[in-house]
Length: 474
Image 1 (cartoon, rainbow, N blue to C red):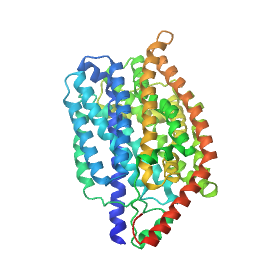
Image 2: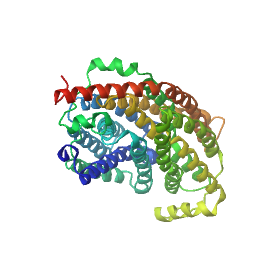
Image 3: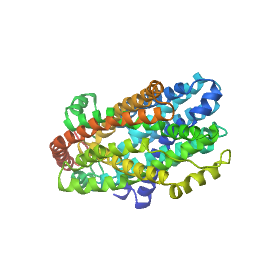
Image 4: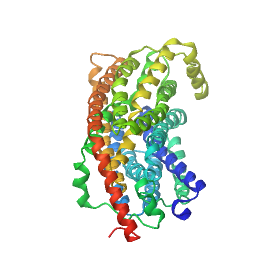
């Protein structure tokens, strides 16, 4: 039994590796937007073409994830994660070496293909490590690691890439290669090992050998909660995708106050990083979701619905509160960072903006852990990676649309609103996509009790069969 489940240290190491690696793929995603200016100058293309790179990369990664997840739900998942990590590391390294726009675009798309494996296959593995009672909490760390990764990418891009945009790409390539080595020492996690219904059968030596097949796909889409969980990403990610332009908004504000472009890039990256710290409170959203789920099977979906809808007014305030920036122009990154941090206490407009941002991010961050946990709750183990990847595909479409269309909106709004006001108006308009997202979570709250009950009944039936046969399914 120890060999099946791994000892405590090995399990902890495996969890840490998977959570850290979930953050690294988001470091790669967050690396490019703060560097739109330097990269566009080096490659001789307008910034909107780099926004297109980010948008297309989101979409390619999401499409690739469906294939990775389906194969992962049928085969050994560990080798797939290692191969995917090597692919995105190669693409990131190629981005650093690119001298022309087509080469940079191709390298980013290669990286996107590899990134698709880390999220979808990794999600399937992590759900097999977590008992249903703690899914919201642990999934909050999973989601938080991705948010931290995006912040780290934004910060690394702005600080390390302010004078040499290639440097952060080379550093991340090395980290990706080290991550592949770390995978070697994780243990192979059995499907279904965290499910209470299967515990006795697995402990008695049974093997949960159920695997997804193409015939299962209609059944997956027939679960009404799955449909709402998948579709909500179209509107949610349109709003979230637009937020990758947050560093640009604050960079433009700095330039409007007379700062040089290099200093403005650092200012924008630091402000955007500070203002997204509210995402740390996704842990609270996960805990509340766990607690309410124990009282009602609609709990997780209700927490997500309330959080998403309540956040919209705070986002609208964030983009329009004026900020007075006082940093040493032309100074090193360290001096600029220190000045921005001190302004939180010395400049009321900065402090108010930070408070508004923390509340907005804290509310919307309730979405992430409860979305992850709900996918696990309403699907058997062999379907989870594929359902996640389908949701991620729709997320990718929404995020690509949000990231790409908001750039077009900025350009159109510039006719009536000079920078940086055009960025503020555009970002505020895109946050209204959260309204239909909240409605879809409310609908999921109505359908999830029945779908969860059906999964429990299915696992009980399979456990009985495993115990009767003393092995896997017939």
